Length: 431
Image (cartoon, rainbow, N blue to C red; front, side, top):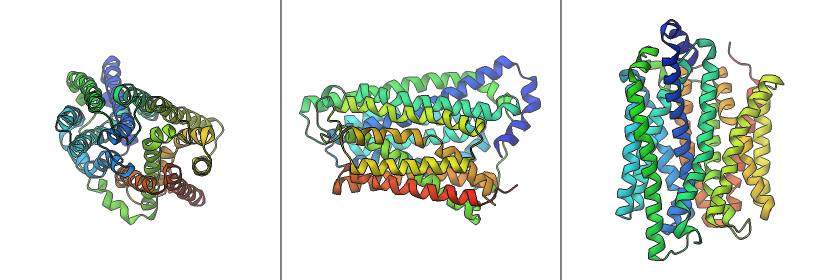
């Protein structure tokens, strides 16, 4: 079921519901968008933290992203089935409870001083976030009149971007101060500093757990309104991502999503350690974490600029995507060949060009795929697993030849995305 179809099917029901009830429901759903953006980006400061605490190399520290984004591949399909069977409100509650359980498990993992348990906790949190996205995206579009569905979803995505801006700052202030403030990433910490850093991780996730607990209460209170505002979704066998494998464009689009998410996550994951290097900015881990906010802020600003360019100047999506991908690839090349401020600000500027890539790849693929939209969308969501695979390869290269050379991986990914965009421009959309 597409967002437009879902929105149209709720028109008569939404028109009879009280506007205040719909507004309250939409505020609650938008808060969910903020929450998963916040948590996802707060993982970035965790990477240099666990690297120092557990004496990890770059590849081992990137397992945090591997554990987190693998959940998208594992949970997306069963998550869709759960939403179809249990409805939006119940599925959102299950998702939030999974996220709460994962956050509360983090102090257990640090108590046993085991990195593997931290990864388990991250997988559980990400599994909840995946289910949350499966339920919240169509729900945001459905809570109101059909003609406003795209505006509501865009607004919710913008609030999600706000969460990705605030998350790294929050994580930096709690996880990269104290014991790690003057520590070297990957270096040895004295026992007192190590204990302090472990407690900082605990405090971060316990605070997130408290926010999630409040959201659970709010969604519980909104449950009846949510269920009354949208219809029960029937399971659709065509929603299986495997049905999309019959379409060449669905496969190519999934590959582009895989590369984009992998490149974006890889750069965000290594940014703090990259800026911390003596040959780049030679700043503390805490200051590098604060600078990371600019990477995600650029992505948020770019989303609004991109919408303006496509809406006012009528620049086509494939041309805008081509320019952004080529620009991002050139910035990665600049990072690999320069140092100091030039390399640092080239890396941070990539966030601005990342901003429009996911939605434009998504829509260009849907317009050209011969498979059902539901199946194509499911395959594209599963392709987010690129955020698990590419960072791991970046970590292996960084361990072998350094962080700057590792930027060749996202550079190649962006070049392939530019090829996808050019190909989309030469192919007509299916009416």
